[in-house]
Length: 135
Image (cartoon, rainbow, N blue to C red; front, side):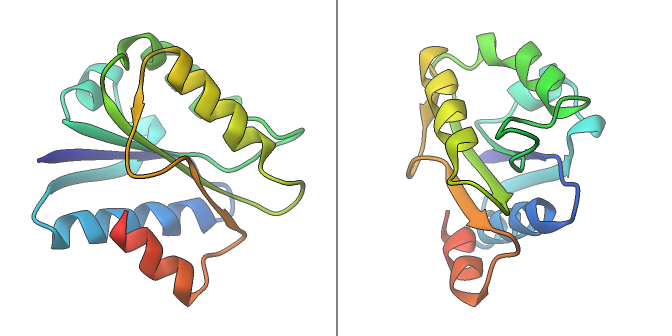
């Protein structure tokens, strides 16, 4: 199993989530590449069996607009049937950005694995850290 962990992080919280997901996947025997979205091409990400996308809530509960949103817009039409995990952190509101992102991914045919999008209020505490490793 090859898993790509593609993320954008402004404060480090979503990066920490990405690292925990990658750690858990490696411990389960997966081949994992983890890197910030700016270091990925869509072709590279699509070559993996599963993709974990991480982006925090920005502005009025939206994906980060300069790096992450353009990358995701470029790749989303190729996600039909692809197993994906969506995750990210937030520090205000109620997670609307994740629900919108889930709907958007499902509308394009992505197969969200394990659960709906995984959100974490600010930095993951010890309990959330263990949950992230199990994803």
